[in-house]
Image 1 (cartoon, helix red, strand yellow):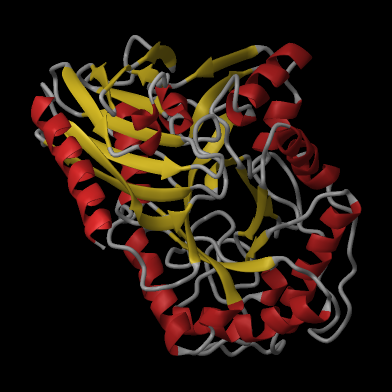
Image 2 (image 1 turned 30 degrees about the vertical axis):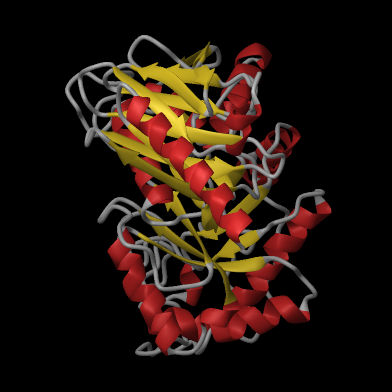
Length: 468
């Protein structure tokens, strides 16, 4: 026991001495502080944005796909969120249902059609994404088909017939909706694609002019008690996700309702957006948690930092780091990866069939992507001392590497010292760094390694990743 205490004392003294010698702020990494398991970062191409990608010429198409999903050329997204259609038609911006025609009654079999245009090219995109390293496919329905809802349309909100506080002359449509979702999963299976997670709601706290369906936590639980056994009976391993609330606190309300109704065990994943309220205190659940949609709607912004606006890259670096480091998410998804939009709903701007432009928001995501952090990594402790303008997170990969992300929100260059990573004490160890700011996009460099520490300059308004 005395020997163990002596060894601990020597190690503590070494760390204390190294910290004292540091000329700037210190990030103390602690592998004994273990938090959530990392699943990845992701995007969606719902509402036919997969079609936009598909129509690019071959070179531009590969460029865009690599920017999104490659862990050597791009951000290394590992999660793809597909839109599960509910519309009877498919003009651009709508997602067509696989059961567009209402049956004669709620007990009649649905008349299914093949996935419309391979699910608006989402099947094609899934194959492309998986080939580049995507690990998870999340299929999410914005609404049930209109004939299953209190409103009779798939848009303008309304509720699924059969849940609490609904009264529909046509009866209870919960089982029919569950059957449709199972058929969708099997359609993807027939294309060689596994749907890992299935969502049946999107922003259920809102009534919108596009596909939408409202739900309280209790009403979501009413459907879960039908959907869960239906998936099990079908022999599917797909897990259920809920509820994609428009904001963190809006989703907390629905999760609480599900828990109070006793249906939380039916969930495999808790999902929330960041619009109405940003990710904050962690949810009270032992389920995995993903932030599954967030963007801004101001005019397209390509800056990393200019005025501190909501759409700049540095802002999003802070959002992502906050979500992983404070809210304990296991996955973080932006809204669209690539789109022909004139605002900031996407990370890549696509114009016609050849132009692809990259926003700085993409490179903010890349620091938290599979270039540096592998699925299954564990978030570990990373405490900053000596400067309140710095924030840090750290992840331990299964191969023993540690990725540390340091965000400098101040204006001045900081000499940042990394302590507490075991590999640094082994000698002759190289620590690579990657810098993103207004002038750099993942520019590679090297940190100085000496005496069990790693030191590098982090310029003002920048994000620097250390990989040890």
